[in-house]
Image 1 (cartoon, rainbow, N blue to C red):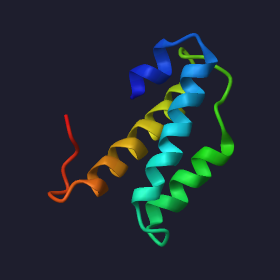
Image 2 (tube, helix red, strand yellow; image 1 turned 180 degrees about the vertical axis):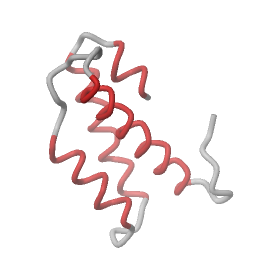
Image 3 (cartoon, rainbow, N blue to C red; image 1 turned 90 degrees about the horizontal axis):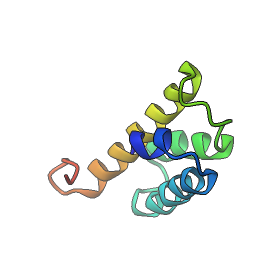
Length: 82
């Protein structure tokens, strides 16, 4: 996920990631703290594309971590799919 956010020079690809992340929230109970964190991230939107900037890389890492956490919540064993 991190690579999808940092390699693509096309804004649509990054916005698609956030849209997919938002769709994945439907599989997590609304009271889960992860939902609040993800909605906060989604509400901020995609920052200016600057893959060499530390702030942009931190944002991409945060989105990737949220994605992995949602995958883990969706798995009965608590492990993300490969």
